[in-house]
Image (tube, rainbow, N blue to C red; front, side, top):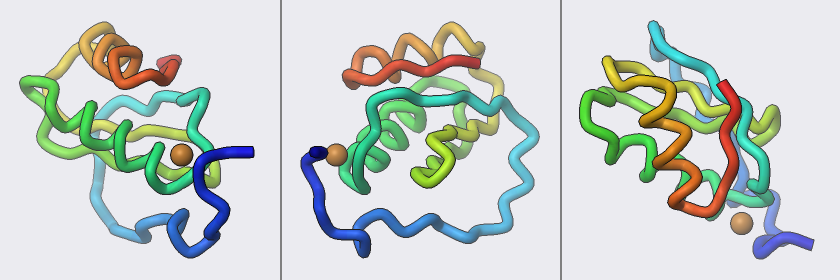
Length: 84
Ligand SMILES: [Cu+2]
């Protein structure tokens, strides 16, 4: 299984950000730690103002001016696969 067996670590942040941005499907996330890594990787991309991962739906929502290629490359560098 994944690296995390605690459901508590995998809570979905119910924030109300109006992400005017891109939504990606992310492969390889199995727990909250994975989600945190993907979130951090996306937020580290220049131009990104916010990034949110929903583990339940395996989606990454990114706000800002970064390109889809930049996001997918950053996620790949973190060890996951993102599809626009
Ligand atoms: Cu994990």
